[in-house]
Length: 215
Image 1 (cartoon, helix red, strand yellow):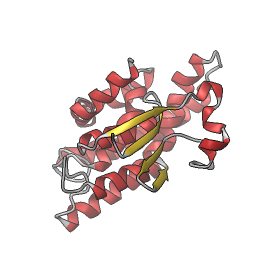
Image 2 (cartoon, helix red, strand yellow):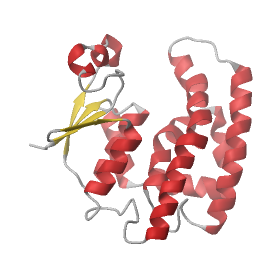
Image 3 (cartoon, one colour):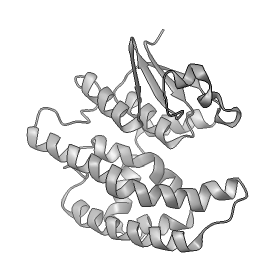
Image 4 (cartoon, helix red, strand yellow):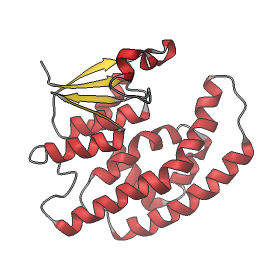
C-alpha cells in the first residue's frame, strides 16, 4: 500500500498539480477523493488536516501538508534522486532559476489566469454571468506577462533553462483550463509560448492525470 496519500479530486487544478508532480517523480500514491459538492472538505475530520478546508492535502507517513505548490516542492526535493530532476538540484544556478520562475508563476501568472478560468469557464458551469470588464482587464494583464514569457522562451526551451522543471510544471493545470476558453488565443498567438505549452502539456505525467478525470 502506498504511504503517500492525496486527498482531493483530479479535476481540481491544485490537486492536478500535486498528482502530476508525484507521477513525474515516480512516486506511488493513493488518491482519496473528496466530494466538494457535498462539503466533505468542510467536515471536522478534513479540517483537522487542512484548517482552511481546501484541497489537496498530502499525507506522507506522519507528515501532513497542504498548499499545492509547497507539496510539489516537497515531493520534488524528497524524491530528488528519482524521476525527473524538477529542482535541477545538482546545479545551483539552474536551481535558483527554478525558484525564481516558480515564484513568477505563483505571484504574476496565477492571479490573472485563475480569474480568467473562473470567469470564462467556472461561472458558465454554474449558470453565473461572466464579468466581461474583468475578463478584459485580466486578459490585458496576462498578455503582458506572456510577452515576458515569449521573450524568455525565445532564448530557452523552458522557463528556467533547457530542462523541464518544477516551474514549468506548476503552470500546467490552470493553463489547461484556459485553453478550453476563448482566452486560449493569449497562448496561441505567441509562437514560443505555444510551443512550450504543447511540450509541457503532452508529458505522460499530466496525460495520466487527465485519464483520472475521466473515471
